[in-house]
Length: 315
Image (cartoon, rainbow, N blue to C red):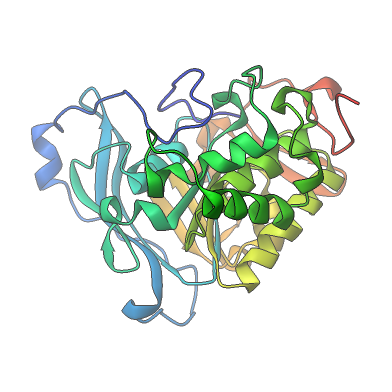
């Protein structure tokens, strides 16, 4: 599923977006402060331990708000799962953290500094639909592109860049396919290549937009195992998903988003019927398959062909 708050075509390998945000409506400044739910008692992270903090963030497109007064704190070494219906602002939140969407009010901070100044320590994995998989580049080329945020598009890569890209591919189990064209990869392999690209610059914070959408259970588990290993190594991860089981099993906290932050806290304490109803509204359709629970919109009709597998493709 795709968050429809922002669409851009065939920009597989760049953080940059050409869309521009306009000034907010006049009433944004006087909007009441939103009280977020903690979801229960848990230790509030010390400010020095925060990998990410979003403070009173308002932003949108063409004068229409996509996010309204978002407040959340993510400690170093946490995995946070962001859930919500299409158009709820999940992708917009990530783009605001990356600086691709300008805030109307408030902002995001990475390791205590404005996020716009910390781009080099943030890794981003876009949705699969935002990637042109027919573009004639190899797996290694894609991983190398993860070094551009620190070097610039016009500078030639050096040995350090190549070693970093190879290490990232090794980390996600894709080094042996380094010379393969990306269009020849399976769904699970494509996700891991994009993850390697996000890792190539050794980020502190990873933003993963719908990383397991459409994957079968085996591919999901393999990908999420890698993400959990990265967390244990000190990486902080914010991922968006419609897989409620994924959030419950793999994420220390859940952020329920629908333009505003409906609830934020440990999944086992906040993911109840009331919160899910407020988050998804009339769009909520819970589908149970392979022992997992997915939140879909009523108009979506999935078929077996929509599910991608981890198996080798293009061989």
